[in-house]
View 1 (tube, rainbow, N blue to C red):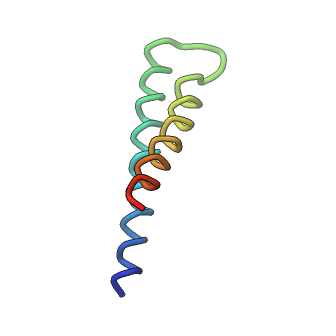
View 2: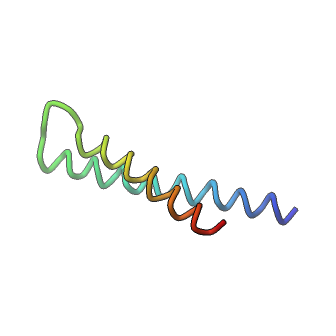
Length: 59
């Protein structure tokens, strides 16, 4: 049961990190409109990278 809870927490932490970075990217896109949502794109990439870094650092 403890392992299940541990991995569930990891999943929610990863989701929260990616969503936070995407929202920051969307905010950047609203500040500087472009033809392609560059802020959202890089926000998602940075969010995935940051969440992987934090998770791999834990294990």
